Length: 452
Image 1: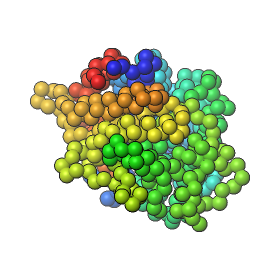
Image 2 (image 1 turned 90 degrees about the vertical axis):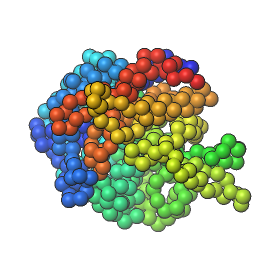
Image 3 (image 1 turned 135 degrees about the horizontal axis):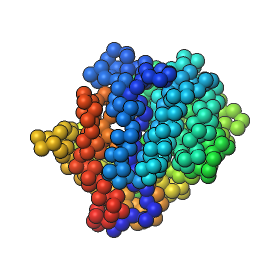
Image 4 (image 1 turned 45 degrees about the vertical axis):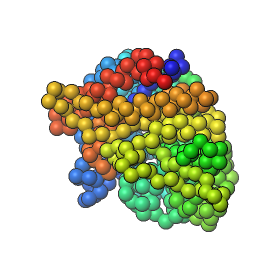
C-alpha cells in the first residue's frame, strides 16, 4: 500500500501553545494570557508565558521539522501579537516574527499552512463585547487582511478557524476555557453565529488580497460517530447520529459544518435550539457559505452507535479496560475510516486531517532517547484506517500529526505530551522521540512501510 504521490505529510502546532514571549516585542494580551492568571483555572498553575519558547527558537524548531522530513507545517498566528488591540495599529515586530518563520519554512522546503485563529482572541476586543459583538466579524476581517497581505506571497494554504466548538462551548458557555464566561443559550448561539460569519468574512478577504491563488479551508472538531457493527442499519444509524442534533448541546458536526458547506443551519438543530437561535439577518448565511477548497477536520476518537429494536439508536459503551490515551480518550482507530468516509459523502470536498495524535506519558530514558511505542501504534492504526477510507473513494489530500512538539495543553497545562519532539520545559532542550524517527520513515516511503 502507499498514499498518493502528492499526499501532504505534515505536523501542527498553535501559537499560544508553543510561542511563549507573551509579554515581548509589543504583543497585546490575549484572553488566554488573562485566563491563565485566574486562580485554579489551569492545572498546576501553568501558563503559556514561556511554553516552548518557539518565538526565540523557531529556527531550531524548523531545522528539526526538516530533519523529520515533514512536508508541511500547520501553524497559527497570534492575533494580538500582530494587532495588539485587535484592530488598528499593527505591531511590526509581531508581524516580522511570522514573516521570518514563513521564510524559514520555505527555505527548508516545508509548506506553511496558516491558521488565522486558534483561540488566542485579543483581550482588548473581548472587553468590547468579543464574539458577542457583531462587529467581531469585521474585526476578524481586518486582521485577516493584515496577515494575508503580508504573507500571501509565500503562503497559499489558509485555515480560518480552529475548532470553533471548543472555543464557543468550553470558553463561552461552560467557562472552562478562555475567556471563561458562562453565557446563556441565546448568547452562546449568537457567539457561534458571529464566529461562523467571521470565518466567511475571512475567506472573502483572503480571496481578495492574496498575491497568489489561495487554497482556503476550516478546521472544526470531527465528532465521529461510527457503527458498532457492519450491519447496514447500524451504518445508517451512525451516519444519521453523526449529522444530527440530538439534545440541547452544541457538541455536534452539523451546526458547525452545514452552514459553511451547505449554506444553512440543520433543521433539527433549529427545532432543538428553538427561540434561542439568533435572528439571522439578510446576507448572513451567504457570508458564512463561502466556497472552500478543502475540508479540514481534527479527528482523535469517536463513539460507536447501533440501531435499536424499536428503530431508534443507542450508544455502545466502551468495553471495560479498552485502550485509552494519557488524556483519557478512547483509542478507536475506526474513527479515521468512518469520519472521512461520512464527511466526504456529505460535503464532497477533498479532506485534510488537520489534527490527529495522542497524549502519552513520555520522558527521556536513561539511554537519552524518548521511547513512545503507544504513539507509533496509535498513529499506525489510524493511518491504516485513513488509507482504507481513501481506497474506498474518500478524497483525502493530507494528514497533520498533532503535535510537532510537546506543548501547553490549555487547561491541562503541561500535563499532556502530544509531540513528536520531547520538550524539557526547564532547559528547553528538544529530543526527537522514537515516533519522530518512525514518522520520518512513513513520509520517506509515502506510507508504503505501514503494510496492509
